[in-house]
Length: 425
Ligand SMILES: [Zn+2]
Image 1 (cartoon, rainbow, N blue to C red):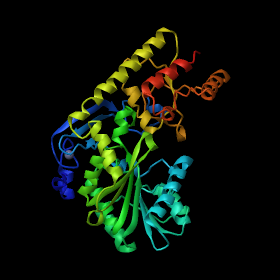
Image 2 (cartoon, rainbow, N blue to C red):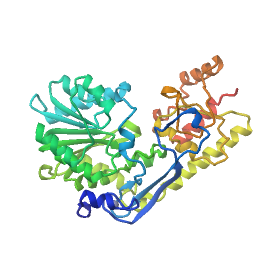
Image 3 (tube, rainbow, N blue to C red):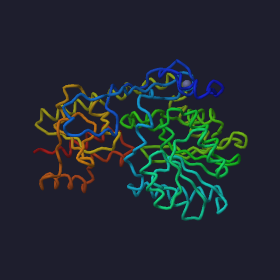
């Protein structure tokens, strides 16, 4: 465990240049995957800006030789991203259902009742805590985005507008008492000051309480070649081992883990204040063993991924050339924000006329999303196109729904599906 080197003051941590490890401070970082430079996700341009120069940021993930944390330098700040966050979790009914099941499981597991206190960090619009309120359990959301937090309060979910820091955590604890459960979903990768953030979690949780963290799993990212899930807002990419080390740096000890299908493959880490944690579960040992078997517990074990990804690109380019020569027309179909910060498209060669158009749903207020801007093409604006897409969908050929086939190699699945469904106009 390398936590002794991570105990630094906030000032010291912020003084470290971007190319040193944000967890242990080591300057020994190796390249894991360099995707070039792309525009930030969630940056919406007005149509008149399409021809103007556009700012891009390097997307180069490095792995620390010492503590193995995979990380992106902090080039954008969470404050830029989250203060006016456009995403409302409740828009996704499956995600709300996921949260409801989590709350039910946590209540049972921890024996939470009317006297308990639950805190969610980055609680968004109350999609999760509403289920805690329903059960008559005291709770508080901590949410940096003003407009999203307001939506939670309207649902009756008490919400504090703030970023979690050790100071915020201590203030909440002083006012409400320590939390029996602190939970956070898909936020542990978004906070570049991972040590300060973890200390904030420790200051929130009661001395005999629990912390639950859902975060994308580097093991499945590697196994399924999910390089399109790498984007500027994800500063860290965790194995269970590096998650365990990050928790330890803030005074928390990993005690259990669950494997989830969310976001292409996630882990839910259960942690407790180190003083009361005890031994980790058998499941922790199993997941660590799986990571070790995939060579992710050594620096060198991370070296092959870039080669795998470049092979994906080569195969995709070969397919696109072949399709063009065959007179076929290939279009891109709408993608989530991190998809159209355009890892795929920006990763193609510069003479990228291989994809005729990319359909992007027009964003609110008529703005378009960060992309190589060559206009828009709506794939369903004629009966013929819509019928073809619907037939593909009904027939089970859904090249845009890669998440439905996690067991297949994603590139081969995409190529096969595109081959089947290429629409000639
Ligand atoms: Zn490190």
